[in-house]
Length: 498
Image 1 (cartoon, rainbow, N blue to C red):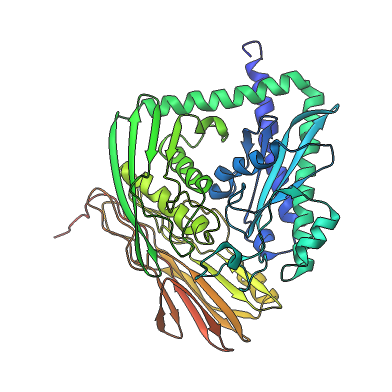
Image 2 (image 1 turned 90 degrees about the vertical axis):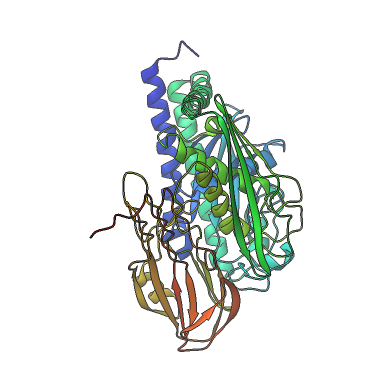
């Protein structure tokens, strides 16, 4: 590998990154649902022939850190040019059911070069609740259609779409995912022919090794020691404790969640891949976000969570909220252990619909302050990285009216640097529909650090009456659902002015 010219390596790295970005652009432009084309709740990545992630686009952290498990779930299957795979089973490479992953092998001269993969959150995947994000599910079967790893072709698309609401939209989005992978496979094959297959394989290996070296150097710069953090998830039936022991030893980090709650009879459970994803994101934040985003950065990080716990659940435990809310809390725990103030710590998941339409969105809030600056306001924090659905697009496509969309002034925690403010979003139903809310930080505020004060807790209201953090119900025409998202924690003791 030492014979590979550094300049040539950087050119190849740029080409790999550009390929992932192009895959994302194809997916967004070809998709039909607002969830993908407007909110961009989708991610793309490239893998080598061994199933290691070589490059990713800067899309959704919770998708990308868990996507290697999806490739691992199909890598040992017979691979052929033109064949693609599809899955969403959380216990076989997936995260939660609405996140459907498509994996496509890439061949050059009949030799397997790698895989192109993408993951997209579909607006519905069947089940009793429109939008497939029930606040109160108890088993996986209540959350929608479970897709075990299987080939994806025209017949499979038809069979899957017919089990879901708005089947035409599901077909279009699945075809968009296939198109994105085909674009990635085409570009990767072109790159192999330009640079040579052997050179490209060597460059992929060097990207992984380089990312590992840089990550280890960053970890080695941290003080050795054992750190602790505790937090809770706000379950419907009571708080669920989470505990972290973080050990920094030389150039390695061990993140041990022993002592956290057992998996529960709700949907805050998550598979180990999601827990790992949140840990990888947090360590990347603590080290150097400019390190090439690849599996090499994961090598110095060991994640431990007992099987059967909330963070390493057994099938068929429900997981709808685990991917979105539990992942956010896991990232919070790691950041808190290293003395960081915390952002809103929730994705504020809202699902609306009936048998005719389904709509899903996550809402931004306040980011934490840092020792150098105030936290930004009204942004998606931590494991989410989506956009909002523009008001114009929402009102054009769905029977909804946006009556309020504004910053929630003063909700950020005070401090030498203030936490960012949350937002207020109020929607009016223009016809009867169901709703499902999955949110956190309604009972416990996002903490500050170094004497900084916590951000304000979030609130959910229906016609002015407060709702729990996790609730499902009906909206009549004219009723208004209002969500006030949490502020971020402040950093440093507030300055007192006489």
